[in-house]
Length: 435
Image (cartoon, rainbow, N blue to C red):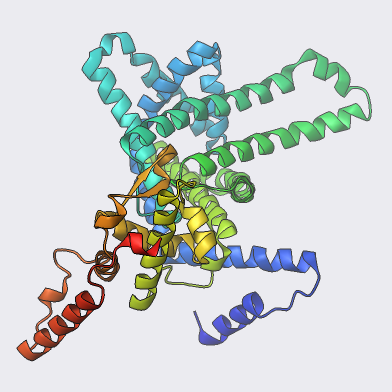
């Protein structure tokens, strides 16, 4: 971006005086979120993740619908599968009907009873791999490096696989029932109820789509997403979904050039393009939710948390003291959110230090979803030197260690003396001495 333009954008976003105007403050905040999301898009990573999800979706869509069909059959609404699929593929026009009919034919050919244990396991594994890929994309958007454990993945993935299709197909069925109900038809002939019903019929699909997006944005990322932030991103995603559907129908589906060039492959290519656009919209909505919940991350274009050595060391000692004090006096365990509030640091910065302390074997997590932090051993066995060493060696790896730096023998001896002096000054001091 040109420096002059960047300067003007920075002046507008970060130095505009909103005064007491709530409307002006809302607009500035919305522009900041839009700026952060647009910057992520310009980096190309959301586009690459959407492309990866296209490939995974093509492999998993039939097994996913087969599992969903079994679930919907239990609710007695399995007949809504094709109408709902037609609704999702509506922007593809006539080609969408052809694609949905072909997919349903594939689903009908899958007979779960004939697959056997191995075939059923492969079917479920294929579906779980799709949800795992989706979670990885969302975690990347939320700058989360840790994944769920096996139990958490199984429970959360099942929620997405089972509840997601039920919400999607129930919304499609509700819309269809609303439009075909005889009672609704009679009431629509009476004003002003007719106008109100028409308005409701136009609004309900948007509300149901936004509810589905909200469900996805809250449940999929491996972090606590506020409902308000999820709704904010869901509204943006819903609007983009409807706009892109209209544009897709007008400029791609009705074009004969693709059929002339790609012949029989035109339907597949158009289907892949629509899946790509759909996933890109979902990731944009997730990015909007992220920046709405973390407005302090918008200004930092690198999105990299930088902690000085002094800050790491003080933060490591501070959190270990808090955790040890609660453990020693049988108080409520500390969690990431409460530690962030107590120390005045962001959760992302704290996570770097907490992960280093866990890696060094000084902390463990327990409780619901492994959110409670406890000392890994007795307080007498955790020395202050161990805590400082864990903080100082954070993010070191097999190929990134101080020993690999080529230096003179005199320098190595000086550094060894500094380490010895630190050990001597902290000799015999344990975590229990702090509490």
